[in-house]
Image (cartoon, rainbow, N blue to C red; front, side, top):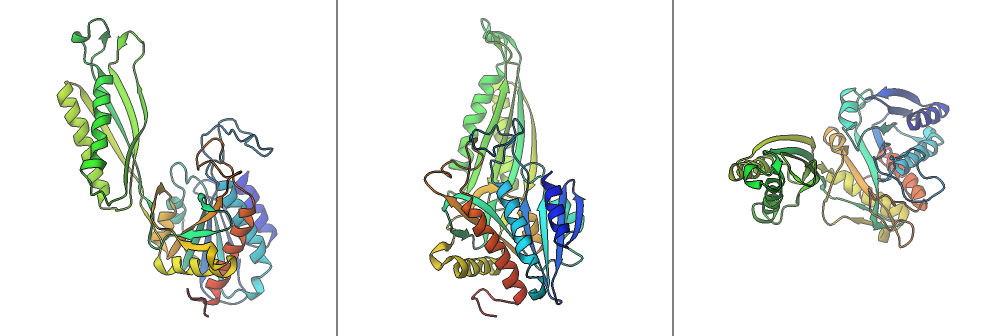
Amino acid sequence: MTAKMAADLMRGLGFEVKTGIAGTGVVGLLRGASSGPTVALRADMDSLPVFEDTGRPWCSKVNGRMHACGHDGHTAMLMGAAWVLSMMKDKLKGDVKFIFQPSEEKDGGAEPMIEAGIMEDPHVDAIFATHIWPDVRLGSVKVHHGPAMASLDAFDAKLYGRGGHVATPHKSLDAITAAGQFLMQLQTIVSREIDPTEPVVVSVGTINGGTAYNAIAHEVAMTGTVRAVNPSLREILRNKIEMKLKGVAEATSTEYAYNYHFGYPPVVNNTEMAEFVHSTAGRILGKDSSGYAERPSLVGEDFAYFAKKAPGAIYLLGVGDDSISKYPLHHPKFDFDERALETGVRLHAQLAVDYLAGRSADGSI
């Protein structure tokens, strides 16, 4: 439905439109009045498996699915920018690609869209994206000057013991006890084995084991995530987790299984494009409303693949206030002040216009 809305809008505006890319991805091409570079604007449009609890009139109609990360806002802003820029095509010195990407929250839609050739024909010279951010003041923007977001890796681990009656624990091997030791050992990786100046997260998100209150569990399954800004740490962290798991298994006479999945790489903003965003936002929103983010975030974003393919930057669009936007991303009550949508549309459109006009980071042409 969302992909169709985006495609129908752009067709109605006279864009060249391709659909069904990497599943439900959509790309629209607006050709300017004269030849020049191509700038791309990207929005992700998927939801999360979260039960919405906002009570808003427009809340999700699909039980157990929610736009808890603001992707509906991202899509709306890009559609708005498409409408604005369509009225300016006679002044554009180049082309604008509008990328509506699926599956950022799950398997990653950016990489398969790139593999399908969306960054070519015409070649994309620069790319920009935004993410709604509750920790940034409403009406303002922050952008990272370089490393912006972390890699997004995942692991699953199992410990196999020997079940039995809780009244005779000496005849069993308790997988739950072993799992508890593993969880405690994991905490020492970040606190004692990694340089404390390195942003790193190792967290277990799910743990499942046992079938009855009076039976010792024979198996415990766990899943977790690993985040790092420094890409050289990813292999190190994978090996350290397995070392902890193996050590616990040996100490408790249990057995283990372990799988590690390397997901999105870190997002690294091109410094020139980050300066470009900072300058453009300062010019249209006011200097006090445009700033550089001080530290990278440990969230993951598959915009990383686009940023590796072309000079690009993702910027944080402020929605933070004390009333509507008081819950964090991925919270069942997450919501945002829709006045931020106008800010996003303006900035998307201005970034495209300025880039195609050859405006530099300092605002000159």
